Image (cartoon, rainbow, N blue to C red; front, side, top):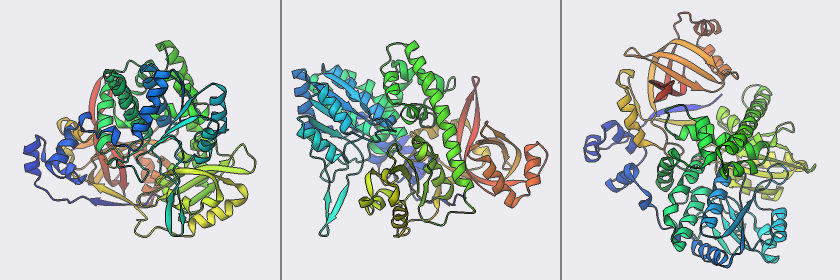
Length: 587
């Protein structure tokens, strides 16, 4: 089961003085300090940062070369093709760049690889199609940094190639020195290349595309159109799970404001389906409802559906496409549940290897990464789920990792076994020969657990807070910490020895639990999302199964729990009520 240790943060500062200086409460001042935001300038930017606080995009290596090439292409009427990935980040990146080039008067269209038949990134088919269509320049987004051979071929055939990507640069060791494998493109715009001086390295592909659009609009004197592109960068930043700090935090905050009043038919239809009446756009809603629907296109069919949605010319057209994406997302959910349940049911206890590597031919390739993430969360171990590819000799899959265990670095140690791979410390994709599977498993696990990396999830709690202290005003001030996500976690509180008054299991997949909890000062309702059967097993280790069943039937019991939670306001049928979003239990 999931391994956690809870820690209450105890970082020191004069919280009252910070509160007075910035017009916030001492609890909010504590939350900011707990996120290592120190000093007046950093606090000011954290609370009130705007787009003016972003660094100049020209500080990004090769951004000037990108600008010169695209400006010349646009002015000469040359055909530019944007080559994107098929996930949320890729689709948003592609939409931003195609729209920006067209708004500057250029000829631009897009191409996207098929997830099943082609896999990630630019490929030979895309290059050949570009040549056949008279394309002059290929512009990649959210891919390309690991495509040196394909880009070399494109260049040899007379194409100009610009790479925009945010993934790690691959490297090899030669004579004790590190040699970075940067593609020989006309421009390579990736903040993670080691010679890029740009101070913020954590943008997603769409964030980088937005900065490229900013440069283009500046050159063509149409900067008044730039803000409308922020919404797409914001959605991608959330869904790609990059750090929600510094520039990303500003992009999401400002982008959500644009998204609230979006005039894009596809985005408007998506939001109307995924948001409750009166509900504000939030990281949670975008990440857990909007993102999966967008991803369903590339996972279960084709990302061309998503691009058609974004480029819809009417609400009716958008609704028809959205119906299909929602249907595909429901199919994706069923496939994911099946894959996860099949893997879990095959274990007798906890898997013993440091890295869980599962070859599951029956698993739909498109959900391998999601399944890997679920298994990783349960056992707190890096997880790789592999499945068959169309090529009978190859298998491919996705990895998800835990804090402190760089899965990309580990894959570099076995790159001789891989026909393709790429990614970053927390997630990666790879392809290998089926005959190399046993060797892959052995060598991936051979180095063991990285020195200094914890074998449990460290849950950092901001404070222990009594229920009687929670009200709507307190919760609304917590919105100053938003947007929350990776590296800027939601405010997390703890409460001990709560009596569970009532409990019900929700959802056709039994993946949500609602509880009424009493800490002696007040009674509040909490909601938890996860595998309810596993939760009942945990409860039954402390309390009997019979007691747990009595609780579910509404009978009086003596069941107590500790929880970590984030307070929120739940909007339902026009009413607001306080709700605890439960992140974990201790029985």
